[in-house]
Length: 265
Image (tube, rainbow, N blue to C red; front, side, top):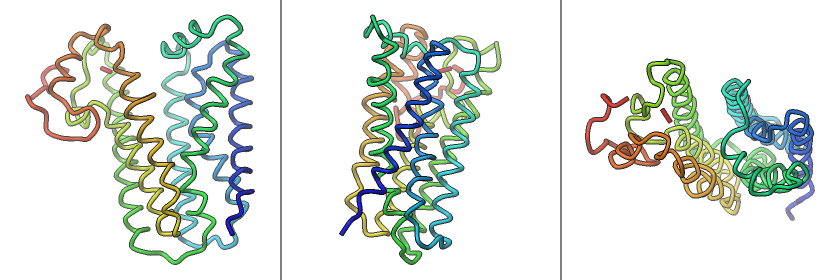
């Protein structure tokens, strides 16, 4: 019989991160700090799950290290990227939409909402680290997929940050490196990474945890990722329209025309 208590313990840990971040957002008057809190929700959720681990074998240790590397890297990158910047335009739109009393409402529509999303996405890691199984082919495939995703996400973030740091690229469209093959290589990498975590769950016999990777895929493609980011970007950067016409939105592939000469998301 499945013991659900540890999974709900993880939810409590994630909600704690969300609540603390909400308090900080009230002080800073900036709810976009939830972006930095997002990877920490997973880190603390997995720490809570780890309390139910009976045998910290090599397989379990590998998974825990992977979660740590992903969450810390993303937390540091997002915090560095947003440090000293005003509230993200996406959250300013939400702030205006839910005024007045947005400060209180934000606890539910942003922080608790994202906490619950993180909890569902975390689902495959629950059986992956708490079920004591031998290392298998699925685990090897999971590691390969995870590293491919981590590479895409981290390299894409590095390439974009370098591009934006050059004043000569102001207003231009990033179409170099991984961004030459897909408009969102960082999102593609994030998706691969979580399907890698799901394969660890499959190895543990928990195919039923598929709502986790399905949810993150839907979020990246249809909700908070590609769609939301590109909703207004064409108005701000007209050249992005051509980029859309020639470059895959998500899955990498050769562009219809060579765009390396065009030049930031």
